[in-house]
Length: 269
Image (cartoon, rainbow, N blue to C red):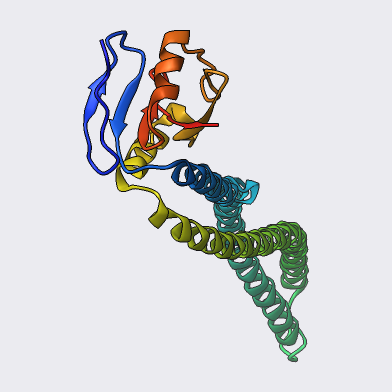
């Protein structure tokens, strides 16, 4: 069974009776298919540039740093509240110590005011004063302990604040790296796209459509076209039977040929 083919300026479709080759007649010359591979090289370069920008390790590091900042900020908030509570307690102790000091001074003033007191009253006064002094000493010791605890908490707060500042600076540096790479990639993609745009008009629309359709498939690796060498598709490595190879070589240069297995556009060498 002979295969119908398209005229140089016409179009027809046919499927080989063996089911191995697919043809679509189109106004296509060898000079058209060579630019298709060149366009593919440019497309692959764009893919690689975009992949580089998308898969920067800095992108993965940013969320980790952000999570770290959130975690440390929570710990910082707890430490600050702890310090505030200690400072309130220390302030209460300081006021109590000051009040006891005033009570002791007032009692001493009263004792030596000239008013006569018997021996029992004097003893009671001394006992009371000593009790106040003991209480004052105890409160002062508590106050000193609180001040030491506040100092420890302030050290933790300073450490948390330093960690947050460090994480934020590192995040800013990573973001700057990402911005620089994105700008570099955008410039490169624009240049590649301009080169591709200059090539595309020389390739028939149906060829580009077939190429783009195959290229968009996940398993194509971004390659919608490949060379046909010695009867073998260099994309999927399938070797065509001799009969089909002869039929292919007999086709006019205008014929669009796709590999029956990977469906890539075949460029005859």
